[in-house]
Image (cartoon, rainbow, N blue to C red):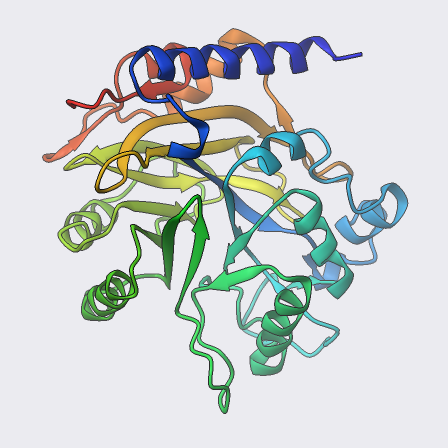
Length: 356
């Protein structure tokens, strides 16, 4: 028997599908591509907390690998591609950098957690990629490869013939390229432009740029984020996927391209004293034309649970849902940026007709 919140979620998705069809956006499922982005995902613990009573490792050992995503796995697996920012090293090593306050360690068996949630690809370009030195980072990529989880953002180990700054996935006849950078600087612009050009030359229909940026715990983007977004979106990039602040920041459009400034924490084994708002950030493209066209943006509102639980949990009360949608809306959009249509504030959904 379905729980009330599950029925309501299914009803919302059915209404969205009907709207897409009415607008001529959803004539055939094979012509609509949906990318689902989730926030900071640390499926382990800071090493100093690993053996604590409510650590991520102990909770998973008690409740099973399916536990962390048990309330949202169905929606995640239904997406054409689900993308996460993986924070931490998947490693058996214990030696870590002394300069890192919270070295994040993930047991190699925990790749099963990612698989249980239907996560297809992860960004590894973030400030925790090298917590356990080069060896820990090498093991991270090896364990992801063994699990069959695509990854992008950090370079493959020295001596490898595989360069992994970017990766390409194919769904429904479309190629989607992913690029990832940590703390992006002006000097990275030429590398991003080059990577974008390489992905387009390889036949990519969509290019997603993942940026680990912004200030931690700040609910609004800073001027550096706005400035960098303006510059990189002059390249042939379709969407910016942001993370690092550990809280959500607004979604905006720049020249018709979505900017997810920050997707918040999704499941995180150490941090609990931050704003818990998060979501499944879903961006859909119509593939029926010569080039993919932005068709819809929707957010399934969630709250991330803290110590002892760690599950992203659906928000079912309307007032609480709309509070999250307000956090995802700019109060005063800077020059060139636009908020999503007003309907987003009440429904969490924005539909774009073919002539928009």
